[in-house]
Image 1 (tube, one colour):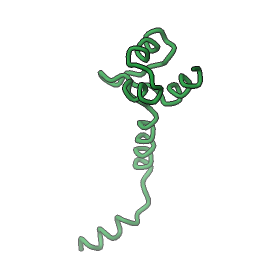
Image 2 (image 1 turned 90 degrees about the vertical axis):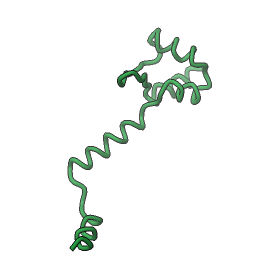
Image 3 (image 1 turned 180 degrees about the vertical axis):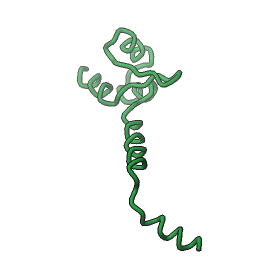
Image 4 (image 1 turned 45 degrees about the horizontal axis):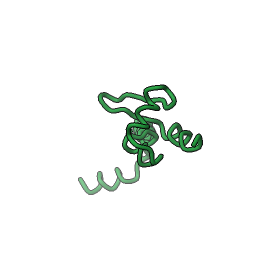
Length: 80
Protein backbone atom coordinates (compact mmCIF):
# COMPACT_ATOMS: atom_id res chain seq x y z
CA UNK A 1 0.00 0.00 0.00
CA UNK A 2 2.82 2.42 0.82
CA UNK A 3 4.41 2.01 -2.60
CA UNK A 4 1.15 3.08 -4.25
CA UNK A 5 0.96 6.15 -1.99
CA UNK A 6 4.57 7.02 -2.72
CA UNK A 7 4.00 6.64 -6.46
CA UNK A 8 0.94 8.89 -6.43
CA UNK A 9 2.59 11.54 -4.26
CA UNK A 10 5.40 11.96 -6.79
CA UNK A 11 2.97 12.93 -9.53
CA UNK A 12 0.49 15.12 -7.65
CA UNK A 13 0.00 18.74 -8.58
CA UNK A 14 1.20 21.24 -5.95
CA UNK A 15 -1.52 22.90 -3.91
CA UNK A 16 -1.97 26.65 -3.76
CA UNK A 17 -0.31 26.68 -0.32
CA UNK A 18 2.71 24.79 -1.66
CA UNK A 19 3.03 27.20 -4.58
CA UNK A 20 2.83 30.13 -2.15
CA UNK A 21 5.57 28.55 0.01
CA UNK A 22 7.75 28.13 -3.08
CA UNK A 23 7.16 31.78 -4.01
CA UNK A 24 8.10 32.83 -0.47
CA UNK A 25 11.33 30.83 -0.73
CA UNK A 26 12.18 32.69 -3.93
CA UNK A 27 11.64 35.99 -2.10
CA UNK A 28 14.31 35.01 0.42
CA UNK A 29 16.85 34.74 -2.36
CA UNK A 30 16.27 38.38 -3.27
CA UNK A 31 17.95 39.61 -0.09
CA UNK A 32 21.62 39.72 0.88
CA UNK A 33 23.35 40.00 4.22
CA UNK A 34 25.71 42.92 4.84
CA UNK A 35 28.67 40.59 4.31
CA UNK A 36 27.25 39.42 0.96
CA UNK A 37 26.74 43.04 -0.11
CA UNK A 38 30.39 43.68 0.77
CA UNK A 39 31.49 40.75 -1.38
CA UNK A 40 29.27 41.78 -4.29
CA UNK A 41 30.19 45.48 -4.26
CA UNK A 42 33.79 45.00 -3.09
CA UNK A 43 33.20 47.65 -0.41
CA UNK A 44 34.30 47.34 3.19
CA UNK A 45 31.74 46.51 5.85
CA UNK A 46 32.20 50.00 7.28
CA UNK A 47 31.37 51.56 3.90
CA UNK A 48 28.25 49.43 3.47
CA UNK A 49 27.09 50.14 7.02
CA UNK A 50 27.72 53.87 6.51
CA UNK A 51 25.47 53.79 3.43
CA UNK A 52 22.85 51.87 5.41
CA UNK A 53 23.06 54.42 8.21
CA UNK A 54 22.69 57.50 6.05
CA UNK A 55 19.89 55.99 3.96
CA UNK A 56 21.74 55.64 0.67
CA UNK A 57 21.14 51.89 0.94
CA UNK A 58 17.79 50.64 2.24
CA UNK A 59 17.88 47.94 4.90
CA UNK A 60 15.41 45.40 6.18
CA UNK A 61 15.63 43.80 9.59
CA UNK A 62 14.90 40.10 10.07
CA UNK A 63 15.35 39.70 13.79
CA UNK A 64 18.96 40.64 14.46
CA UNK A 65 19.95 40.27 10.81
CA UNK A 66 20.26 43.27 8.51
CA UNK A 67 19.29 42.46 4.92
CA UNK A 68 19.55 44.41 1.68
CA UNK A 69 17.61 43.78 -1.50
CA UNK A 70 19.81 42.52 -4.33
CA UNK A 71 18.40 45.24 -6.61
CA UNK A 72 19.53 47.93 -4.15
CA UNK A 73 23.01 46.41 -3.93
CA UNK A 74 23.27 46.31 -7.73
CA UNK A 75 22.15 49.95 -7.90
CA UNK A 76 24.98 50.77 -5.51
CA UNK A 77 27.42 49.23 -7.98
CA UNK A 78 25.95 51.20 -10.88
CA UNK A 79 26.30 54.45 -8.88
CA UNK A 80 30.00 53.86 -8.66
